[in-house]
Length: 436
Image 1: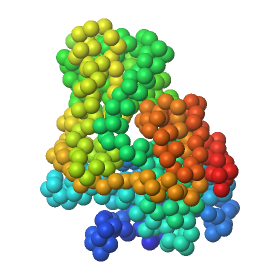
Image 2 (image 1 turned 45 degrees about the horizontal axis):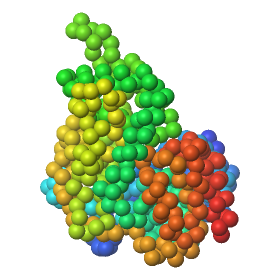
Image 3 (image 1 turned 90 degrees about the vertical axis):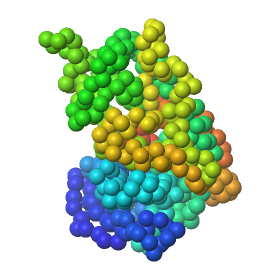
Image 4 (image 1 turned 90 degrees about the horizontal axis):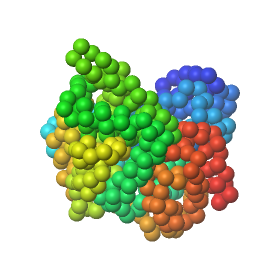
């Protein structure tokens, strides 16, 4: 482990940490990669007197969020913890994975083999590899948001001795659901979010249909070379899973067209706004391994599950919608083969993505028997109609983990830990302490 000099932000002291870990923890003497993590401590507090809280970001494929000072839930955490924001392998400043770096691995087959080591199992083993050097061997509390909750559930399955407590927000996964089953549950939820959006903003029905009809005839290039198709436009529905997402989508749609000498055209401002929402340039690992995070059957590939399952939900078919008079349905947190042809940050990785989709040999991520005997205090915020993580799946898992306490709420969407800030974290800490 190497530690840089500490530096300050308003009310906090930050310290950079770098670690070397095996790419494949089953081969500790093999290739190694670098991890980066940022420690944050409240100014004026003695870090040596504080227990550790490890934060695992949602995703997959996103680096740990970059707070400034004591924003959001961090304000509450810093009252009693030194907080470690880990850039999970392949993200942020941790040996990044993208179209620029992956060719260093060699062929698409070699790239796919490399990426097979970027799921929750490897992330948890990374955490356990760095914990002793930071804590002196003491266990720590983990806060997992979304995919970070998936990682936390794996942590409870494989290394509970490393945990004092586990806090999960919007991230209790099904212990057994296949990728197909995850998306079969997802499309009806996404449709409900569409219906709620159009009930709130009925004027968006005509606006969305008009934009889709325009793109059906005139696929449009976004700034940076991203090709916007009807399917790409529909994927703006990923916004509908956030607390303010419906409002952001509405504002994006309301000024889509401008008059030009050649007739109405999609405005530069609209296209730039769409690019900011749809580009995977900042998080390509999300697209590459998104379906692999659900793979647990060694004999079964994920085989582009979201695309296959979508075919059984014809209300999401834009051609059929535009031929009638129904509202256009946006899609949500789904990855499709066409992402790897329309997005320039993904296009060079299409063959690699196909190989990952065809891959078998994935191992189970959760141990139901061990979770049923769990002794670690666990609390989870479950959002009543979470678009990203199926609520029924989460509650079934909650019943399967001994001692897990839930806070089921419709006050927040999937990003509740961001929107609710200190209050969400305080609620979860109260629950685990009641359990303990």
